[in-house]
Image (cartoon, rainbow, N blue to C red; front, side):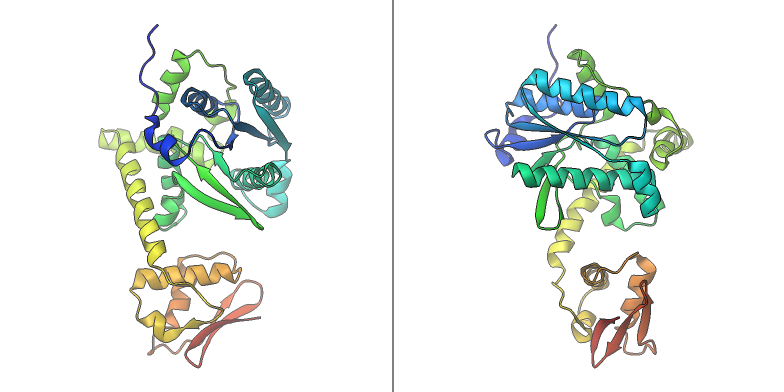
Length: 319
C-alpha cells in the first residue's frame, strides 16, 4: 500500500535540528509519542535516547507501559531511560493537581537524564489538539496570552544549572492526522483508558467543553483557537525581547517610562527572580500601583511574611 505524505515536512526540522546530533525523546507509549518516534526515525534521526517516566498512577498498567516502551526501544536499537515517581504522593505532598504534579515530575526526570547523558535537547509529542486544550485550560485559570500559548515549538526549561531545550515538531499536526499515520503504518501503542474519563480538567475540555462550544456555534472552533495561540506565542517572544532586565530593586522612574504591558512583564520577571509564589494579575497590579505618583500605597504584602515596598524611588522586597 502506498504511504501518504508524512505528518510534517522535514526540511525546517532537519535544518534547525540536524540528524547527526543526539536527542532525547519523551515516549509515554501512547499513539502520539510512538508516532513521533517513528517519524523521527523515518527522517533519519538515529541518535535518540528514549525517555519514559512511570507515574505509578494506574497500578499494573503503568508498569506495563514502561516495559512496552523499553521493548520498543530495544527492538529499534535505541538507548532507553526509564524512571519512576509516585505522582499521587507528590501531588498530595505538594498540594498540586495530579496533572500539574505529573508535569513537574516529567520535567525533573527529563532534566536529570539530560544532565547525565549530556544531551540538552528533547523531542516531545504535543500536537495541535494539545495546544488548543492547553490554551483553553489556562484561559479558564486566568492566564495571560503568554500562559495560553504555553506550548511552543521550541522552549527552554531548566532545573538548577541544567538547561533543556524542548522541541515540539507536531504542534501543527492534528490528532486525526496522527491516528491516520499510526493506522497506515500499523504501529503498536499503549492505550491509556483514563484519557476517556472526565476526572481531569483537560479531559473535560477535550470531551465536554470543546464539543459543547462546537455544537453551539455549529462549526469547528479548534483551528481558530490554535491560530490565536500561535499568534500569542510569537507576540510573547517579541514582548519578552522588549522587556528590560531586572535588578534587585526596580527603578520607579524607569518603570513609568514603559508601556503598561512591559511594566507588567518587568514586574512579573522581577517577582519570579525574587521567588515570590503565586504571581498573578492582582499581585502584579498592586505592585504596579506603587509606580503611580498619586498612589498612597507604599507597601504590598506577599506570601511568606514578606513585603514589597516603595522608598526613595525604588521598589524592593523586604523580608
